[in-house]
Image (cartoon, rainbow, N blue to C red):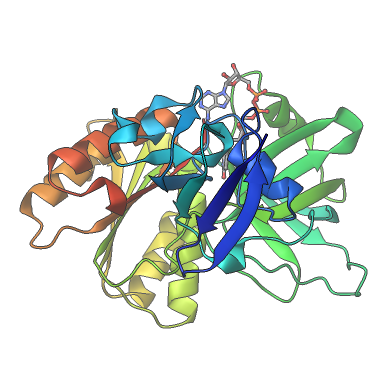
Length: 340
Ligand SMILES: Cc1cc2nc3c(=O)[nH]c(=O)nc-3n(C[C@H](O)[C@H](O)[C@H](O)COP(=O)(O)OP(=O)(O)OC[C@H]3O[C@@H](n4cnc5c(N)ncnc54)[C@H](O)[C@@H]3O)c2cc1C
């Protein structure tokens, strides 16, 4: 037995496929040749967020911060955790262009820069080797991520791209070193010239097609990466848009990319950057607290409710989501990319 699934993208394209009761929507779409944005496939990243507008379904375990407390009230789902009990009509928050028609082929890349830029924070820059068409270009939407793989260690992790699409095949990443983390340990001794595999792009996080409301970007540490890509693209294209960026770090030693953010603020006069230090020294003159605290202070006096974009560790996302909902931002206007 299988059920008929209709999936409508944000820009109105309809995909139709079938799904067995014991199959999740993400897998069923893939079996039908539709490669939907996805990262973790275990309900922990939020890339496959969608909404069920008709039909009955089961939602299996997921990271609670990714969906409202009562997800069935408005049909909020994660496609990788949704199993049909009937025919279903679903909508997604991504556009048809973000859906692939074939499995992506991993590309080989060389490390061209790897360095500690602040406490526990690495900059990793890669240069892709030419693909089968002899091109080094890599197309993606700012906000998306890739999987980086170290084949000899059988190690693969997702990282958001911190740079913008370019013709040189260069990709930048900002990576927080996790104690005893496998990829973190690899990075600590990684050298320029070593090779990695890059698979992607993937994910639907970003501002594409989100409209003209003011925007609040809330970043926990290296959660800055997708926002850097988005802001650089806005600067390149002269898309000045009322935007607040709240970047959170634990202490001043963890602050990175201060100059780069100042340069972006010069290029984008409507961009306001607030660096939030949770446990600052006495010398710190900037904001004291978390980016969720800074978001709260901003939303309480905002004339117009903004779209809120969150990226970083799950606990920050949870706190910032609660703040946004409590101050009147509707759940549909909160977009997150969880590093959990
Ligand atoms: C879509 C997506 C995009 C991502 N983009 C980025 C990015 O741009 N920059 C970035 O730094 N990370 C990013 N991450 C997180 C990244 O994929 C890894 O999970 C992280 O780098 C840890 O990998 P590891 O191999 O070093 O640690 P692992 O070996 O996987 O874990 C080792 C230990 O660290 C703990 N741990 C792992 N991750 C975290 C965390 N985030 N916070 C607290 N403890 C943790 C684990 O519980 C475990 O005890 C992203 C994750 C996703 C799903």
